[in-house]
Image (cartoon, rainbow, N blue to C red; front, side, top):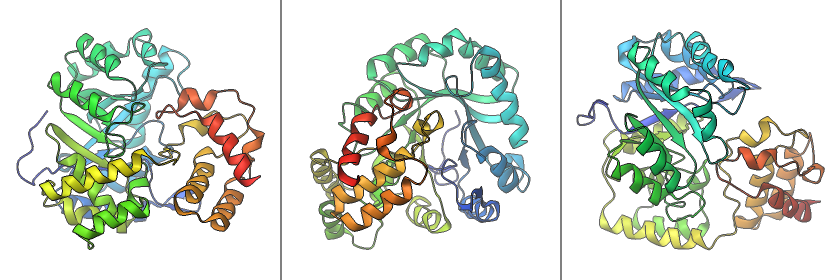
Length: 370
């Protein structure tokens, strides 16, 4: 992988999972303005995926058709456990992604969201060999995988596949010592194998952009003029071996905030690191549902329950004590189905990258709102 030189490449990547919408459709005009601002700041890394609904088509219009191919780097992903019932369907995703984006090739290509309950499919479908072939043919420049599991499995995969160019990990200060996510331990495994790390969920699905009031007070004492998201992104960008930090920006305000401190990135100083440690202690005692709103759980829900939106309402009550507002949020989130309509099939839990006990959390939501 190419080395970063000063700020010409930068450590901030534009995550294309949570793009702005106009009604039910992605707002391509808004995305185009965000793309232009991102590139004008000297940043080039864009991250999408086959399973991000409408994302590859949107970035084709906002980026690929409007800017020279050499002016940006584009990453997308192949998912072997969603929309892939067999090897042929899994491999077909690459061609579909090429057609959707019109990019000609991908700079970074990932085997998507490997976990304990799905990683064997990538071997069963011969996808490790497939991405190597794509790289040999020049259709991708670098290949790696994104990972949501334990450090033992990560070590096993990197040992079995030493030629991977990078690994994408969920790292944020809230999950640094979380045993379910194992941010620190997975980071250390990747470093042991000498792999550049691309960071996903640095703001934990937006949660760390609006942390509990106790955390806000700690950060405000040091610098009241910076956003709470900046603390989260700078924490991971300050770690050794980080190639890119992905931020799923949903509007121009978020874009401009990120650019304000990542265009000319400065690592955390000692006082800021101490503040992060205090925040970690507070969050470690929180009863918040640690959902990142990836919506993988909703794809196959037979009851069409909008699980992340329900959890967001619950967290509003837990973290802020706003029962009336949380109840209104719950009402809006359950227009299709109530939390009590869960049939406990377990599909959601098998798809969850955070390994949450979703069924139990839904039961708590029923008790709180129904």
